[in-house]
Amino acid sequence: MLRTRGPLAFAVWSTAHRNPWAAMPALTLVQLGHVPPPEPGVPGIFAMGDPGRIRELVVGAGFGEPEVDEIAVEFRYRDFDDLWDTLVHMTGVLAQTINALSEEEREAARLAIMDNVAPFRDSAGSYTMPGSSWGVLAR
Image (cartoon, rainbow, N blue to C red; front, top):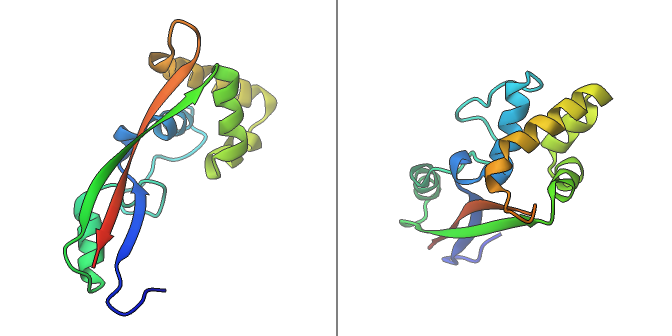
């Protein structure tokens, strides 16, 4: 609920390519055939990742031109087990998909995800996964 003439402020994830922390594991499940590829325009974590779409929705709802600022984030994991634990316990639909796999499929997915996120692993074995969201303010 907004006050009359009050501001609208929200944050949304930007596009998949700017959020490998979520996109890489999901893409791996697509590659393995466990989920279909995402369809453009369908609701999901990156549905409002395009600033043009944000503007279209905000202005279309009667607000003025929105200010859209990038908010960079990093997800840090001490090792792959820490990253995997996050995937299987805290990532909504992704966690549900992984947890519904057979033990053999889950282990194959785990190894494939480990391979796909290897570029984000440092020499000490920890992972730093970048992310990006949009902070939006409209009046």
